[in-house]
Image (cartoon, rainbow, N blue to C red; front, side, top):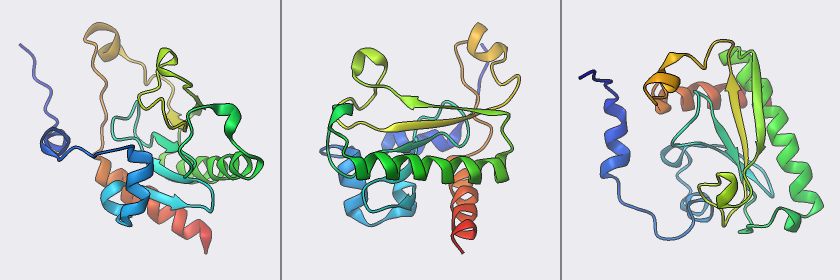
Amino acid sequence: MERLWAPWRLEYMVADRVDGCIFCVFPSQNDDEKNRILLRGEHAYVIMNAFPYSNGHLLIPPYRHIGDFSELNDDENLEIMQLAQKCCNALKNICRPDGFNIGWNIGAAAGAGIAEHIHMHIAPRWSGDTNFMPVLADIKVIPEALETTYKKIKAELDRMAE
C-alpha cells in the first residue's frame, strides 16, 4: 500500500465544526489569519479554500448570505470582480501560474460545496498540473501547507495595497 503523508490535514479532522454558514461566521469572528481571510472589501471578501484544487485556490463570497446568483447587487458584482483581479495579480507575482480557472458553482448539482452562500472560485493552474495522481490514484497533490500559502498571498496583497 502506498502512503501519501499530509500531516497538516489533521487540523481539519479534529477541529470544532462551525455552527452556521462559514461564509457568514468566519468574517464576523475577526480572526482573519485563523480563518484564512486574505482581503476584505465593503461587500465581499477573499478567503482561501480549505480543501483546494490547487495551491492558491481562493474563494470570493459576498458578505450577504445569498444562494442565488441573480440576487447579487451591482456593488457586490463589481467588488467581487475587482477582488478577483487583485487576487489574480497577486497569484501571478508569487506563484507564476500558467493560467486560472475562475468561476461559480451554483447549486449542489453544479458542485457547490456550500450551495446556500454563493462564492466565486479562483484556482491557479500550471501546465502539466493534471498529472497521473488524480487520474490513476484519485489523489490531488497540494505541495505546500495552507498556512505557508496564506502568508505568501497575504504579504503580496498587502504589498500591492501600499
